Image (cartoon, rainbow, N blue to C red; front, side, top):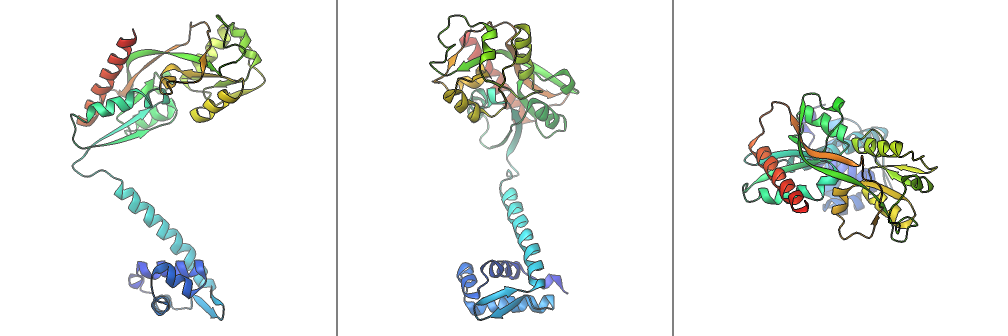
Length: 308
């Protein structure tokens, strides 16, 4: 069999005929005449060396050989489309590229402002923004997939060959719906939390360890219902619709302003974490990465100095 004689039109035509099981409907789908479809299938059958379709009065059916080829051709055409889409989505050769990992507490606030600030300095830039847990992002940074990670300070075990630049400190807040039994209290005793469903950051993340330390310090027993998630949309709706209490970074909540949730007046000790930039130790930033680093530093300085 001379594979070089097979064209994309042959495979596309066979796949559509196999889906429609009708030469007439396949011709309509392909914007061809029925004789043109029949000719294309005949050419493919001649190349393969065996029948691919069985004709009958109500349409056509795939032969065993036709079924096998349709399966492989369909998968191949899907892979080709995905490859073309991926290639079309790549930056042009003249574009400066920047890859940044960002946690939710900064991706909706400071990061967009930093991107806008870059526009004045870079007329053409291709920016990739990656999400995930802190540990996942640090792994990608270490492997060179990312230029930087913007978010909370990672655990020491995740900082091998990496260095952290502290930009500001951020509190965790406990959020509840308006009208929640604890919402009107001038001072909430931490032990009262155990009476309600708690929505906590995913286990193993730095922010979860901060929450866990707070709960242990204040002798808060975990309630019967605990939700472990980093899904912001789900958490937001759950706390709006129930008496659940959601522990979230203050920076994340800023992106929802004005927000219809109430911050509970809990003790603030132990609820603060460092936020900043993590890069590979000793690596020289690219031109685009250097500009983004500078823009992020400036956004952090101006935003948090204004609050202070």
